[in-house]
Image 1 (cartoon, helix red, strand yellow):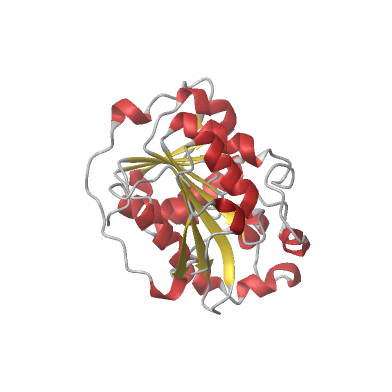
Image 2 (cartoon, rainbow, N blue to C red):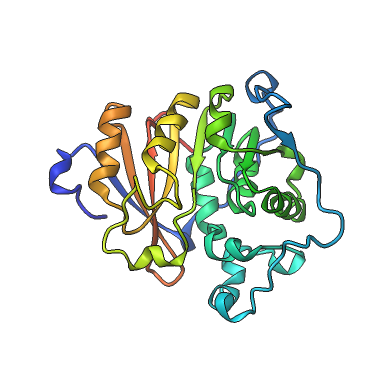
Length: 273
């Protein structure tokens, strides 16, 4: 693993997580914590129903612009052939299953919020390690796909799907962990020399998302581009959680770094698994 950047003062722990070598998660059978997970007013967010038949939002990954990701479909979802559905953005943005599984082990907890659920790649794995998963997305059609994919994996009954804007809902939420994987502004993010967390997060303020999340839970896992400004990531840790930060490189099956995971606020006791 690389040493901490020169300006970090040695406070940041670095870990390299190889996607092909993670352990399978142990399923948790604990009941949902109703007192902590049901703080969303019906007028603000509505629960989504399962897809009935084929979801019209699905996108054929064999199209030219997503064919690269189609060839990696079994890395994205091992059970792809059992009926997994993705929309166009899902092909670009879903976390590969092995990496999502590793993150779920690291974020094992009672109540976890997946604040930008997308087509459900992370929420599905959280349902195997956490007692209760709250899956939020501002796009209703994408949330229906997530609900459908969770049913394919047999975990839909362990996930509470909520249609809404996480930042608007945050003041009404409470959890042990918040997981953040907001849009990175499309595939072109990789061409930037340095990804600016504050201005390049798909029209959102990445720093403000973190601040809101740490008011919801003491621990936040943030899935970030591999070219993110690490100095800014550490600066936010110093500002918001006394420097408690671990950075983890997420390595794909081709041994190349695909993303960076930032664990804010996690302690050694909470990470034992």
